[in-house]
Image 1 (cartoon, rainbow, N blue to C red):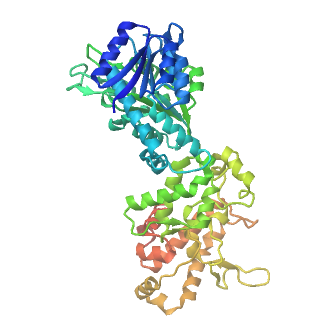
Image 2 (cartoon, rainbow, N blue to C red):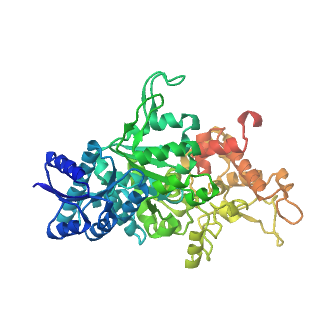
Image 3 (tube, rainbow, N blue to C red):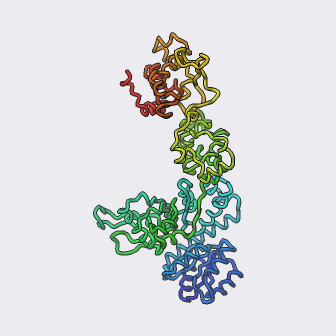
Length: 571
């Protein structure tokens, strides 16, 4: 079927030039010289796209942009005179698909028309099957979540993908700005082109111009060959400028011209090269405040901030945490080649929903990777998450809201990190802990009864609330030590507890019964003594000692290094 277009301009020669170009592309076009004539054509006929000038004899092309974009999905592009970028930006904000500058360049016009026809084709497919379009499937598979804040975000992304306007993505670190940028590219007519992401803060300032615009051979010392810049690499596609606020002021000026003129000049070259790219940018900083502070150019801010898309924090979309966790666990299982995909228990899922995610989605992914590493079974429970226990007030709705606003200090906030963890946090308090009596030579209570203490092995693993015994390891350890084999298991526990109650430990307790050098130092001394006891029982076999203590070999090796336990020093 022949495509049709409406061309609106008051210059007869320019209209004829555009009409001839469209005819060669197989597109039938109608020409209108005034705003009223264009409205008449639009009401009488149907068009696949529209191309209009902004300055017309009887009105402004912005009125036509507003009417067409507000009533239909037909892409409309605007023609602007040189130096009228402000009007072009306003047209993009009103819903214009793209813009082209005067004097008109035919290659640029052809590229604009091809992109507009791709958008029209996408719209036809969406109307034919609105519930299962490829765009919807791609959006749902890459942007996980159906909470109240995510549905409007998905609809906005679909609209932005149809446009060619620059988009500024704002949001806290870890909210998925690059994920959204890739989605906008993959859903746009430029999806066949390349997506080039670049972290502006990671490029040295002296190499920034060469990285963005390229250089010619011999243009400076070390330029042994021609090099394409990021703008040339992204030609026909999308350039994503992440952490844009880190650009130095000198580079902001050059970037402004490249965005405005859509041409770049490599270092050492004598001519400018036109580029057809779409600019997407992002930062976690407040650009408006940086503009007021004078560290970011105001004109560049208005060029890139044509359309701003704010991404919600994970605390604002807690209903999506279960489905996000399931998605990440499936990815981890695939990347790590796990035989059985891990899953969260109901308690662990509820604990995640009450956690204050300062790092947003990125923190959730890292937390799940840690939990999968520490868990010995595919079922991830609360103790594998490594999060502090919730108080009764934190489980109430108002506490969750306070955490969302960042007012309640948690384990990830600076306020919480300034206070040492309590003994209840480090020492598990589950019913499965076995209480054994200490030897009569140890401390007694006022009635002369032995003081009960938890089994020492359970204190060494903050993510484990149960004690596991390994008979094969204990048997092997007993064979290596005949003296230990003569006694029963109670005698072994008695010996370990006596080692814990060493004379040098009592010196750490003051008259009030509290650690003299603080809780952290006291707990480290306890932990060190328990590890040494297990190592001696197994003949310094770290693998067997780790099983005796109910931990992993890597964890034991890390703790030995942290506590400065050296076999050579103790022999």
